[in-house]
Amino acid sequence: MKSKGEREKADHPSASEAGKASSGLTRTMGRRNFLTRGASLIALSSTSLLLPKAPFAADPNSDPMLVPGSPARSYGERSTFESASRSARESHSLTPLQELHGIVTPSSLHFERHHNGVPAIDPSRHRLLVHGLVARPVLFTLDDLQRFPSVSRLAFIECAGNSRDQWSGPQDRTVQELHGLTSTSEWTGVKLATLLEAAGLKPEAAWVLAEGGDAAGLTRSVPLTGEVLSDAMVCYGQNGEALRPEQGYPVRLLLPGLEGNINIKWLRRLKVGSTPFMTRWETSKYTDLMPDGTAYQFSLVMEAKSLITSPSGRQQIRPGFQEIRGLAWSGRGRVVKVEVTPDGGRTWRTAELQEPVLSKCHTRFRVPWTWNGEETVLQSRCVDQTGYRQPSRDALIKVRGTQSSYHYNGIQSWKIDRDGRVRNIHA
Amino acid sequence: MRKHGTLSLLLALFAGCVMANGPAEVDTTRLGLGQPATAADIRRWNIDVAPSGEGLPPGRGTVPQGATVYAAKCAKCHGASGTEGPMDRLVGGQHSLATTSPVKTIGSYWPYATTLYDYIHRAMPFDAPQSLTPDEVYSVTAWLLHQNGIIAENAVIDSSTLAAIQMPNRHGFIPDPRPDVHDP
Image 1 (tube, each protein chain N blue to C red):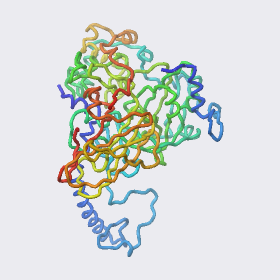
Image 2: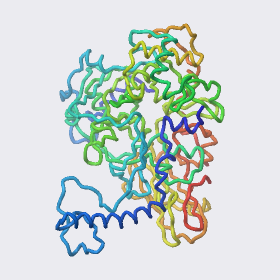
Image 3: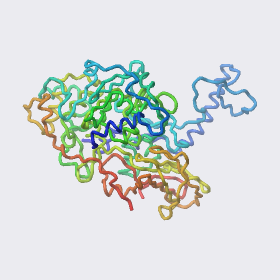
Image 4: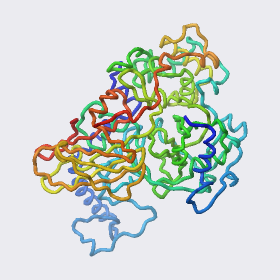
């Protein structure tokens, strides 16, 4: 018989499994080695091939102002000096939140979670079927979907299981390993309401089953509330280009503010019904078990949460000026306030929110701070436009116990040791 | 969860037909985009099974047949008796949900037996989804329900008997009550 931890991992990513090798310290060392080795390798290969110049080379002895640079290229890549990476396991990968600037997650670093691999879908063969309680069952091609009136918006997607190790713990891990199942992109597509209108909803329509075209055939029931009809999109674009395969290429559902799992990727079917379909993923999974043995079902919204991403777990800081930076978001709307304590909760400072502050989207916050070299604990907490306040871990656990697995949004505490090392604690 | 009569109005509002501030009104019902789906198209794609039993195909299965299919195609991931893993535990765990070591299985947690058919057919075995025949899916479902003490060893599972099964945790779920945590 397996331990609980093993069982959880079997079905769902445990953030702590991932990226164990990328501590701040080892990463810094690794990068230094990489720079030295990478530069000499490139220098070596260009010499041996007698090329006139090394493309994108970093010859440590050359001055880039004294040699012509590289030619244009058809699809860009980041600098060879950059190495921010997702920490990837077989069925998920986590966004390196500690490495990001601003609010947009580069598509290559957007977290992923799949339940039987990333399918390879030929967009010319892909169809979206809309049927069930509609007047006109219809099959759409990708071209059809792209011809409908289009919309774009920035939105975060957060896996319901993000931060799940914080129900137990605390483990000494990075913010990426603990909380990296959240990312923000600009999404482009057609409103779900537009497609449903085209198919003609019948009066008794109240739910829609969304089905993925992957090997899991992942299915979720989506309630057709006013908010869903206002927000939901069938997307083909991400950050200005086609969706990435890990994000549902060629078509995905986007339900801003709702748990990642219901944002069905590789969308192939929408079936309108009058009641929920009770799929495996909304009964035996993605339900929150309470201490009394009952479970919350269709607990879809991701409640307000904030994280200090710098300084954060396993980083090393030095005394002196240090801007405290982080991300905050709410599935219920805009973040209206973030507060940061540099002293374990004795005093709280209101953080500056970087514009744009958008509904259901990561919001960047910052507070200037000077570390005096003494032990301390950093925390952030946020309030959203509904007045909801991000709870402490204690308050969360008092209501939900420690076995609910999903939807953890307790306040994160980072302990700064006297030697400048930062670690995850439960305070 | 909402009044039915309001849905078409909401749709019209959100689809952009009645945009208060929009630059143009577009009747998206008349764009003529997409191909009408035929009954045959829908039949091919329509694989979900509802708690009412709607969507269950003809066919039947028994516990002994299920034992054979399970041993051949399921046991390597879920263990010989459905308890050993390494993947999800399927059997046991009754009366554990309110403890600090809950064991969530088909028998202890799943609210609908019909979900078993839906999920096994669409997603299992993990390395060959949709490869089982309806009789094989019914049989494995029967074996799993029997292992969990929910049906007798001589029970026959088909579209009507499966939908009629009352799962032990059928009433264990409550609609999302959040926000439920109020930190002073």
